[in-house]
Image (tube, rainbow over all chains, first blue to last red; front, side, top):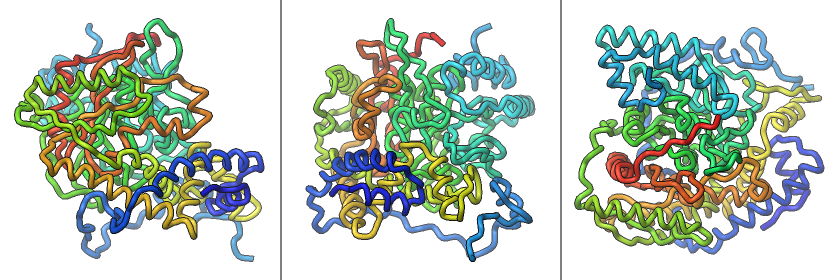
Length: 95
Length: 493
């Protein structure tokens, strides 16, 4: 499988990365190089093989359903580029 | 006075315990060395002298009070991927500009609890994506090693290039690192240092900036096998904050050093003999086999038939996981923000300005292989191949093999801004051909220096073990180290 320029622009949109025409052109070639490289996986016979979901066979740990953390609003917004009264500020979302 | 930075962790530990030196003296020696060398090597992206001296002073007080921990007063460098409270943590990316975590990663907290001293944060490939440390926003790290008679700058490997270079150049006693596809073992091999990626689940991933969560593991880079064993014992733990942290006690790895290899079976996988591999790598491998045989181990030929599919499967699984993990960098909660005409425009501009070329490339691949219509053909297929890669190893271990010996890398360190590698991302990816299988299967892998090539550059051998049998790797690597000796670069910086 290979990607064309329109697909690269669509994927960039999905990934929320602005790309210039020139970058999209360059990425098309690079992505096709990588996709060509991974293409060899299709020759592996995987009949009856389960996909790996966990490298170590273990049951997911569960903790007691109790509040163990919190009241850290100041810490949470401490690194925000723009915040006010412990809210994150973003450009207007709703018209 | 002797240069304190030349002491290994074990040597410094004895001198500190015997009160021949103080932690403050040792820390000052390292801070001086960093000051003199970092301009040339670019190994540190942030140095924290006040914090280091305050921690060293506290260590001296604990030593005086008889309350020394296992790493008391030992100055360490920390890869920029580990969250350190109030200190520069940016995964060497522009998108995390100014980020100072409000919390400490479990691994670094374990080190501080044992008395270690933080010197600063180490350079790396951006978000740990790379094999040469050239994708860092802070520029490349220079390998302290140069070919004999050459002044050409070489890469230290990656992604933990700053960690490996700092350890090799005596700018810290040991360093933390992380390994998703070879990022501890390949730079260790390129710099003549020892690096171990423990079994997946041995070190907590809590507070480590995530790249590919099913592959990421923390481990140490150190000057010798003993130091790596000392550091891993402190870094490893059982942590409720990481659901993939495994409930097994942490052994005293140092105790396994010096144990006999008699009766051990070492597997030699034929699939690791790849086309175009320099003859020197093959010679080194045969030398390693001979050393282990001399030490009483039995050598057996094995086959790991799906080896060649590990790298292509990795370049689906790792970018897929990265594309979701890196979705959080949106200019809202931390780091860089570039304003836009609406929120989507702000996201796109922020991510375009904040991520470097290699990171964007991997996010794009990951987004593509997970997008509607392609998931089964790529991601699902890769995860099935991953099952087969792991099965190969399980069958070898089931047949009685205790550990596997391979070369660590297909070459010694290459030049910074190598034109051929820069032009073809896949060529660069091939650097991880011997290391990536281990991440795909979640196994422990250790890289130990085993010799120099004709250019005078270090080469490493890799040992791969059964899950949670890091002790086997330490005792086997110790035998190789005893036979090969240790390697330090000639100072040019």
